[in-house]
Image (cartoon, rainbow, N blue to C red):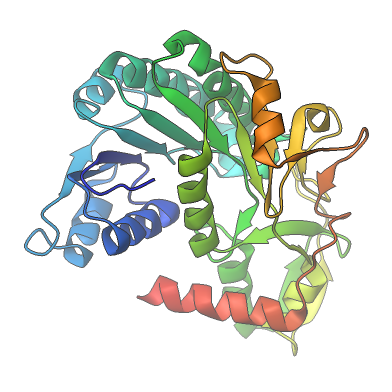
Length: 335
């Protein structure tokens, strides 16, 4: 999708994904407006230093919260595309403050949907997480609910209204709260705490995440959940890659944490198409011809009982891969 001449808005625009997404859009396109929507005035000030008004005259900075429906209605005026990246994401914080997670991740999603439909936004892509598949913690449960809201929102919008889709992927290398910066901080102490030596995770870089969102924006028809094919990593391989001389100490799995993550469950697989580089989970209810989509898309129906999980993945990162990804993430963080 050519974003030149379009008006775009990114919720959570000062976060790790938001900043990388905005930098990529400015590098490739000439948008009419590019609105950074977030709650933190300090982060917006810092971002403005990196993207000065004198050089990037399309950027606008809106202070606002996705919980504030009136502010969303004001911000979405004249907007063509919304990327919804704002969320409360820290598992312990969500467990300790459950109503706050619900207000932001679920009720905020509902406000995004209403504002987008009523303001005539053309496309909305919402970011999700592997923790939304078979969730065991509140963060995952709120994101699953958010996913359901966005995939069903197309029915509210009608056949000619706003199109909504979801992108679901795994852990982002080097993002805030990621294990990579944590391990790098602990490296000087000589001991890395390990929750469980068997633990596996899906792994994706910010660049890959941004690229996949842009691709999904292009291919979406409305109601799909797009899942990229990405590699898995084992926590012990990561520890050896980042701190080969450090000892490890097993501390046990934390509350709300899984041993392995999953992005396409066995039940989702019944309505999932496999493509060369991604999976598409089709919506249960939609106002377009799913059979025609299946025939013309080149996708292959997943087999009964298929699951896309981090422990049964066929693509694994080596220690060398992990070192390379971590070093690039660290360099990007320092920019």
